[in-house]
Length: 287
Image (cartoon, rainbow, N blue to C red; front, side, top):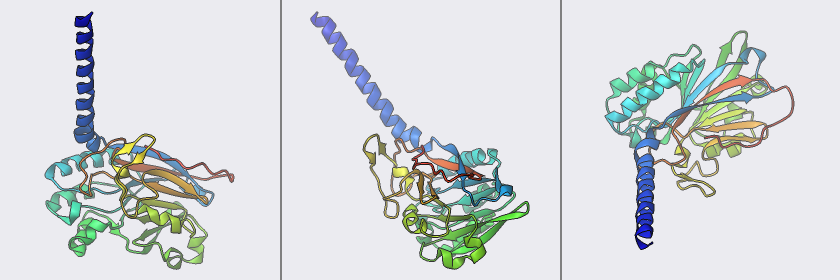
């Protein structure tokens, strides 16, 4: 009996060690690069009939720090291109801590994203840690139009929607004409907590990144890492006052983080549809 108990104890210890090892390997080596595309519908009564089925790709937070990150980014971009989006938006943070390198290859990768109705970008805090003009030139060389508290009208078929690229939330409505305020408005802004203010403006859909999804998400506990500007809204989808917020977990790590758990890197593909009734879905933290 003692021998059997000893064998059972050794087996149990072996299983525990294997589980710990496998979990550590996943958190350190697998999860940070376990990229996936999240496809969702965005429904709103202000979306024109012509825009039903229009696909918007959104990705954020590359946080590149090594040449291996560029290899990983190439794979992510291939996945995004396979979705055949109509328009693409980048949510900011190119290089980790703004330390730029191998810019020609990055430009080539960004330029390989091909969509028919425009590539747009806003800036993250990392762009302000280095030469800001270099960051803007890099994005523009990759085919992106950088919006700094600026508005663009998106034309499709015989109708329009409005895109606002922002660096703060204080003046959205002042940027819009009355006609634009009465239509469907998308706001791209790096930090998601601006949603608290933007939900009380003409904005209908906010796209943000910055948070890394909390990097380590513990079930029943929540994210272990909360960044300034992303403490209230950390990951996934939120609805308030008929307004929608999408928070991407980003592609890279960033913010000196080395691990991910239950916060996979992602990009979003959002398909527009027209809401025909007043029903609003409840808040959802997708991932």
